[in-house]
Length: 292
Image (tube, rainbow, N blue to C red; front, side, top):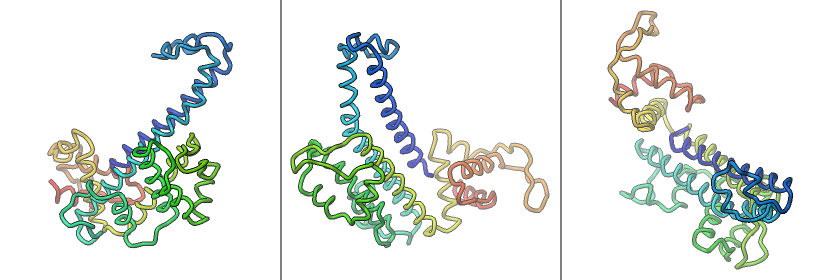
């Protein structure tokens, strides 16, 4: 899991926490006396006095808050996934031959989103997650540029999805993508937000699985070292540390002194965030030596 993925995961969890908070607030309002001030129900919550309404009215407000937040959360989740794709393409371009740039000399951050998606398919046929991710991107664009109202392009994209892809969306959201007509707002609530969150995760896992076979062990080791170095303000200093740390034992059983503290940190980083790769100490040591 790269630093881009970790950032996205934290933000996604924050969206889930926000949804939980809305539901808890609604429950508190529902159990309070209908006409007591909403501020008295949640007195410890900063800003609650701004509601300025009784608990019954506040309960109705929280009923619609989930949908309102959904129109903000979907673009946010999709943007985080696009950032992950940009970071992944950037890493791939460090290793010649892994993928072919769509526009020579153009930074991945300026690629069109469909170009990013196509590049990260690595020539394979689009999967259900790929197709659903395209739909999520279009939904995000509709929210951002069309006031959230369903336009013909979004409707045609949904209607043109294969039945199995629509079934997957329904399994994630608990209902099909629903709207009353062109120019109307879709039904966008926490079920849809959770569906988009699940789709971004599935897409990221598929990209990781494809990438796993594209890079050599040495390239993966270089990626891990670069991620460690660039992932925190102190990463570069710690990677280049010449402090010997405690004595370590090499594969030959003999004591190995020297810059082992930085190598041990790399091993911990790889174990925490790249466990499926099972990177060895010697692989990470060699990658570090090549980079420092």
